[in-house]
Length: 317
Ligand code: TXA
Ligand code: MG
Image (cartoon, rainbow, N blue to C red; front, side, top):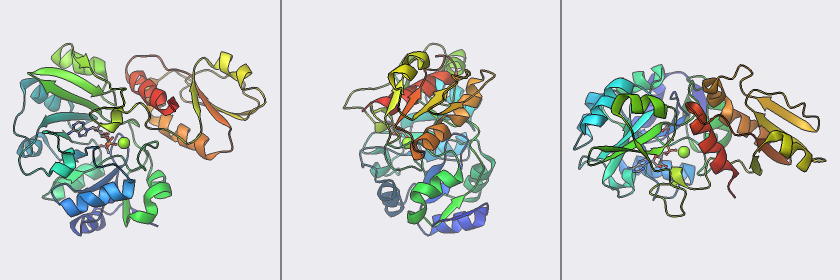
């Protein structure tokens, strides 16, 4: 099992040796390794059992550092980065030549971001290399939002997990790319669409659901528990699953579930609170003795969009 601790020096020692570690960020925990060291990056793919066609996000300490790893920075990208970093936004930008193809899966652009987490930022400031880090879960499974989540699934394969407490955002970063200066959102996430549009105007959504996505965070099935997840109106679903032990995810409302359990993510109707809790809820219900997970759709605004995106992908079989 991995050692769980808060010691940045120990974390850096493992990274320097070329081993991946669990890294806290504000969105979800990452499985981080030296981004420019191909042997270290290969270990990320092995530990996650991740197909090599799924590119990795590169993490740096500042916009200035990000600029060292990209060959172009469109004006809208600069505006977004300056207003949002450190924060839950990944920019897809033309990569500098030294970024290994393994990191970008051969694509000409690199996904890059500055995470907003004190431990991660301190670590990134102390090292002279960027970190490649996908979410620290086995490929296709629910992302981890605590150090223990990482331990439960990847602990046997990595030496160290830097414990930064529960993630404060709880869903992955929003991914934005550019085509001729036009912004395209590829993944809804922790940075609200509304905030992005208030900074750079209307953006195009390209949230792939096809079987040939440009990257698997966009696969129809992803972020998925092993148990079936059914999305819909809880009042209609409960009678349909009568006699089964159900795990219910509800936003605000108490559905009086008797056969099973319900997790109310935010009785006060706060979507940011719900986003913080959604992956823990899916994990808890997946590991409990339930036959099926039932979830309602969340209001399709703010972080509710990212929650609905994850629930939809979790429910596709
Ligand atoms: O919040 C996050 O973004 C977290 C934390 C750890 O930073 N990371 C994360 O990484 O969610 P991951 O690997 O689970 O999802 C990254 C997704 C890929 O599946 C792909 O969809 C997209 O980012 N991506 C990364 N680099 C890309 C590239 N060069 N071109 C297109 N898509 C890319
Ligand atoms: Mg992931």
